[in-house]
Length: 259
Figure (cartoon, rainbow, N blue to C red):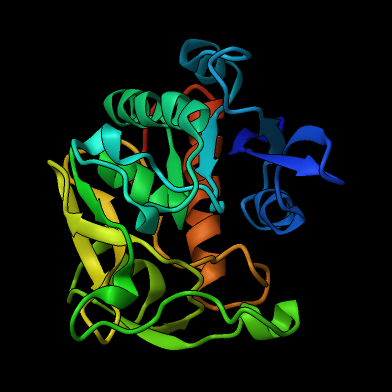
């Protein structure tokens, strides 16, 4: 059987201050290919180039990656402020309806960092523009300096709900994760179940209640060292299993379906 085609949502960048591109980080591609066991397919997330319907026909599952641009607050009924940072409305116009369509169909989706926030917003939730500005919250942004190893180092614990999807998937209630985000969930969307929290109460792991297929997301970046990290590997492996079932024509399967 062919490898499932895993659509990896790209971000817009400008190379050398003049050349616009859509790109995906290599670590996302490696995780999709070598841990989830799929064929990574880079998606230019812009409705001028692709449509949700076409993407769902071509791909067997989707990874919603992180990115510097944030979900525009217009999409969840709030006004933009300086704290909201940069935006990518073209990506919003693809990912938000894509999430809703995949949840409805049972097509596998995995949200990472910005993708975690996109899934919440797509389901009607809202976001805080800057977690570190909230009373009692920690700074969840990545260190501004240092090597990639230092920036993606494990920095805080995440505790999962007893008996929940993530607890069963990881085989433990507490794990260590990296943290490289500024925003976070303010109000969860309809059917969004928060199953994991950082020590300061920040939401870190969610699933979509009642989704017929794999619909999980985490606020950290599990693509870093995914092949060897004991937290990242089971997440991508379970996503890959769901995508293989979809590719084989078996329809949607939940997050914990065996291969």
